[in-house]
Image 1: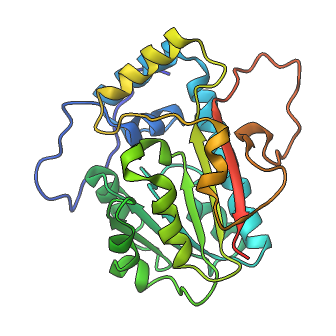
Image 2: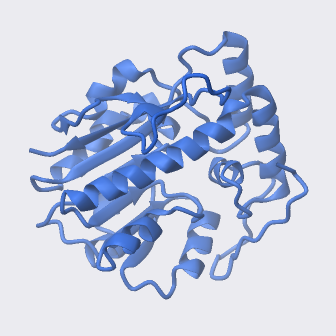
Length: 276
């Protein structure tokens, strides 16, 4: 990766001047995935994070692969409506791309609070009649659940797949992520799904953790890692599918990982539950 890559963000429709004075976690994530929807300040911070924790780019790719597996499983289960919370910057392998390859009638409501990500997404997806983009904070579920882009696209009398992929670690403890998810759960009918992944610092050296978290402290969304032991609280009310909460690379991989591989370990766990 190179911090010299140029941005290809399309900001048509964005009101006001975007704040690009500091790095943004969503755009850093896009950079880890090899995208170009980021600015120089994001690329520099991402490169600093890669130097601190080389597994971060591998983890981003593993997380995106988990998203693909989760979406395909939802469709196998007959769930073709998706509420993607904290969807970030659209890049290769987004939910609508995966879902529409299998079911062109699938409906996807993207939600993100970051204005640049939303403006770029709306511009890219303006011709997608079965996709909406809503600017809202996932920690205000009532606002999300009453937004026109959600209510006019998704039918909550049928099962919904709520996706919280690599986003809950931006929700502070005092915002009570379990309670936030419970509100979305309570808005859904039986057969609905929750798929989530979450950053952890388990098995990392304390010095590495301190340096890595300090980088995200410079963004508007500092990271709050949580251990896998906190997964059950986030999945309250759901029947958790096997293999349960596990490292993201171990959640129903398409190809079994090579135990002799030198690929860095992904410091993210994942889980998938169905509402009975």
